[in-house]
Length: 77
Image (cartoon, rainbow, N blue to C red):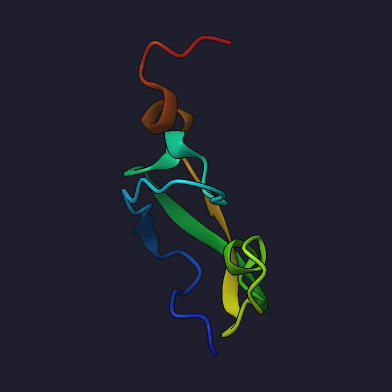
């Protein structure tokens, strides 16, 4: 499976609250970021956590987020 998102593409994290093991931090739900790189495709860790095979493989992306978009304009540090 090829990577559906190109480097530089602006993406938004799905708002998909679920119970159990998920790989996406809840504080990123609904936040927009930019694809920085794709590290290839790997077995789906969320499926493996529930003793499934993790197939088909899913792309693993590095996504950058503007800290102000994630934490707000009052960010200090």
